[in-house]
Image 1 (spheres, rainbow over the protein chains, first blue to last red):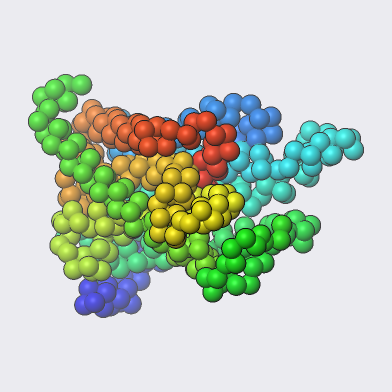
Image 2: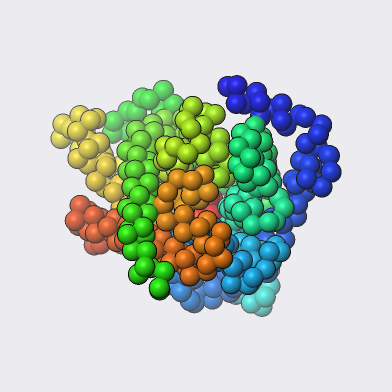
Length: 247
Length: 229
């Protein structure tokens, strides 16, 4: 507990709020780095994911590539790119993090489009929509919650990994963790950790709300509640053997 | 590959500790999530609560959690327990959802048949529900395994010895080859873990290959773990 009190004292100390190495400046850097990474990764991954989801082709390749990329240790890739590019700017970690953000974005995009009911797409084609209209007016709105789901887990991963990337001389909130570790200043490490956790949870919460908001009104209205919710006794752990829930 | 041959002993020791640091959280995550996942699936109120807690825990970035462990459980910052416990928390957070979904995927008429021929709740769980939930559980466990093996390397930043030490050491010595060896070996460890899990699945769940429905469930479980939706 004393550790947390010391960390909160560090967090509220005005000295740590001023200048280019202060909490607001570092948080700003972290957010800018994260948004930049997600933007580049989206430009690469979303069109490919949509194409795979729309055509149904190359799905196996996408699944395989995503799986292999997930096994790639983030820290190793960040350090390796910095060393072989002999560059201490944010460019090597930016490339590494973009690569790591691609699998969740790709998975969200193609699984989102795949989740759209086939007969809905056939109906859209039957009433004369072009392929582009089918994508933009039918598939994309219906799949948006899943696409955002990919972006949501990508954002978490990127926020976490920019912290790790502060092993290189870049900015962001990871600076507090590494600089604190170098001088054994535990309140600074813990205080920095608390800000990163808060940032991650806020990002996750905002995405969760947006995911709920983008469900098209027709889909939300037509949603049938699950069987489980219909059995009023289930909440109390009582199930009547032999009685089937109403389908 | 010069680095590998001249440091074979060191690399071997790091690999062994990497394997241990990964294996304990994977096994712990599986064991601990079974009862929690069962509760999540069993009662209407507990499902959203437990899944939300799992989602929030899984959203916490790894390095800050490693750093916070000494303050939470009173260990030293160099203690490997920080990494093992933090990674176990992630494993549980991810597996609770999978376990709940896996148990929900067991057909209701099968459970009722078991009850009808006189299986009690305990015996029915171990001999009917758990084996039938197996393929989906395995899919979740494979996702946990890959991400745990990769995250252990971050523990090297706190000074916990494992293959991630090749990254920190390689950076200090400007030695890309050492870093590359670390990346390759960690991917090999992840691959071996995955093969072991697949083989265990073949041995313990021989029916899962015959059933097409479980294939779809497995894929959707793996997808949920990635997209969180």
